[in-house]
Amino acid sequence: MEFTIKSGSPEKQRTACVVVGVFDNRKLTLSAELIDRAANGYLSEIIRRGDMEGKLGSSLLLHNVPGTLSDRVLLVGLGKEREFREAEFRRALRTAVKLLNETGSYEAVIYVTEESVKKRDIGWRIEHAVVMAMEAVYRFDQMKSNPPELRRPLRKLTLSVPQRSNLATGEAAVNRGMAIASGIKLAKDMGNLPGNICTPTYMGEQALALATELPVIKATVLDRAEIEKLGMGSFLSVTNGSAQPPRFIILEYYGATRKQKPVVLVGKGITFDTGGISLKPGDAMDEMKYDMCGAGSVLGVFRSLGELKPAVNAVGLIATCENMPGSRATKPGDVVKSMSGQTIEILNTDAEGRLVLCDALTYAERFEPAAVVDIATLTGACLIALGNVVAGLFSNNDGLARELLAAGENSYDRAWHMPLLDDYQEQLASNFADFANIGGRPGGAITAACFLSKFAKKFNWAHLDIAGVAWKGGKEKGATGRPVALLVHYLVAQAPDAA
Image 1 (spheres, rainbow, N blue to C red):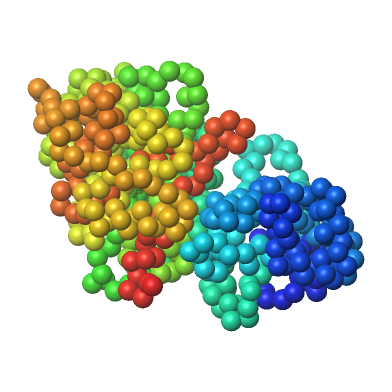
Image 2 (cartoon, rainbow, N blue to C red):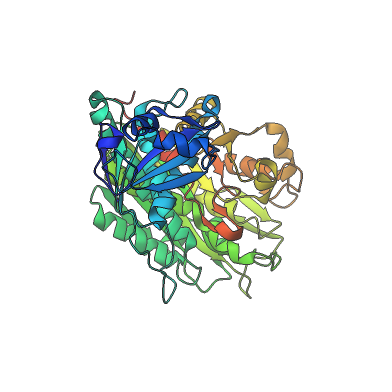
């Protein structure tokens, strides 16, 4: 989709549709008032009759409005004016674009971006308008033999800014939004693919293809023999039962001088998780294709970096394999040796994400990182604790945690700071190895993070448990692309010239 920035009066826009807002209790926004004046009270009369109340998420499409040059005027409900904040803004934009895409308006000018959002400037509003627009038109239908076709899909959106002095800010925000949306789309596509297509080999191929498309990114893909040579015994224990070969992927982006230490992102890439010998229940097991969403988000972030080209250095590490039962599969009670030299008693083969991540964290040491952030659909316990709204954030450094939380707020891809106390480490005690891979049901998300912390003592580290936010079920079933936006905001903020 094409985006442009413009400043001008809504009634003078010659376009397929002009989009303006109406607050609850039938209050017109300024842009709606301008159209109403040009139309001699046409909008006021419609609202007075009760056709549009202004409830958040409501809409009313009008044709041939007098005094305007556009074919249509779309009224979008914004809810109560005093409660119009980030969530309401994003929902209104999504409602508008989804309707435009379904009604044949191949282009439109949106004025909702002019409405004030508490503590958010015009750059924030434009960036989020782009991201929400791209989310609203996203479809994943490449696996269907006859995908449905839209009659006249939305191709161009013009986003309005209040003043001409806002044009440069708006254009920069469009570029940010497009890059973030592009990364989110890649992460969604990877997550939505079935496990028989999105294999570890396929993920490696996608990393190499990304580097070919965006030369500022370097990609290296290691096979099983190379992984064995590194001594990643913990990682390899997960893949033993699968016929699919594992891959270890290294992505590198250097937008700053080599003197600047990189941020390392580590993604869990279990392309399908049966639980292994500790087999999962069959109900909803198809959703375990989403167990590679942490890895997908790392690929998405690097696409965004390749398009934005910020002055930062970043490395992505993806440990990807299947977790399958089989005669060669790792068994409960087996003891394996990690790349760090620490031994692990595997009490439950369904706690496999931490087993691949721990070796990747050890590998991250060679980059002498400024910080390391791992991203994983790690525990059902985090879903129970936090639901589907925020990701769980654990860290051994409060400063890093604050930066990630702030990035989550700015991107509206939010996280919640969870405890990481030494007291929980006792639950991982083992009689037969240095420690076990699970600590029992109490505090399951915390003990999983405690396990990872044993491999992150040489750097500032954070762990994002995205088990509750990486995908949706039900009628909107599909990957969300989170936390690409959070991570891009965090990385861009590391640039020396970042505000």
